[in-house]
Length: 468
Ligand code: ARG
Image (spheres, rainbow, N blue to C red):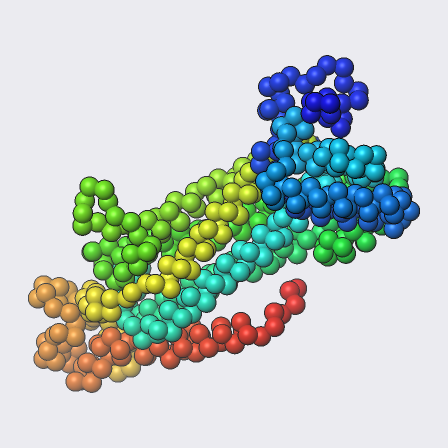
């Protein structure tokens, strides 16, 4: 029998499917990626049917062995996928029937492709979330090591991309650690809602067989069966949630990339990316381009697009399953692939970043980065902050005219702006003085950076807290 004639739903049809419609409607070119989850779901379903007395034990054994042979053929590359059989589910089921005969025809008892596909995607996404979490973890580990190495390295902190105040490189890296940890929290949270089993919802209304959904849920590692059959087959909010969490994580990686691109330019010269993470130009021999962060910044765009695609896919659908949902897979697959790739490349790149401490220091010494510290010094002498701000503003204007930073002005010059300034002022005008003074929780002082790193490391060693 040809594949077209073998379509499992062909019974009520008189005419064959239009050839172009067959190609247009098929999803097997991309959903074959779910073959492992599809086979695992089928095996769990068959075993449950057998335990409930709905399938014979021999039939169940034949189904399980047949599905395992199919899995081996797929993995060996010898399975023939057929577009006429539409999707991964019908390809595998048809191959099973061809292989083991009548027992194979009983597998679909009490089940529909609607609960089957919803189950497959959730199983697949659960594993992807675990891989994303491992990717975030590896990047955080790389950043903790880098932050420790550069805990006391001084660079200018920026607001409006203008030099603002001196900070430490370690503190800057730890800011990204905070953001990545929140990203991980979003994926953990998403996993809890994704790990609920649709199987048993059948097409939409449940099934009249006496199935045991707790058995299948346990066998497949789901936390519980879904409570409502209509909801179970129709919503893809878990996919949207994953993509939203991915979009936020990529937004973070994109911002981080932007900093690395700026910092590795000759104008900044703060960091040097390893040759292994850059490429050259085919025409300009001097060039070393930061392709990796540029690509990560660029890939954020497609993930934002996938989020919009999935939201739009879902917004007009009445309950329950609609074929629209077949369009959920490509955005979801690409989101997971792009994010996992970005995390992996970023962790490797950050393990090989060289810091140009002299350049960072020189940049922090310019731009009057310790002006706030001079104002704070005056406040300690009893001058109100607003007056101190004014005094320092005038000193900065003078320094700008003279082409010298505050620390380069003589005591006599500084005293023209406030006669109460003493020669201890130079302690606060130094970069070390400025960063060491910010020694509270969350501040940039090297001691605080080291304490923050120690807290993160201790938390990573502790068993994960039960998520609430
Ligand atoms: N390929 C389909 C999908 O991805 C499987 C479910 C099809 N169900 C149906 N009733 N046509 O959504």
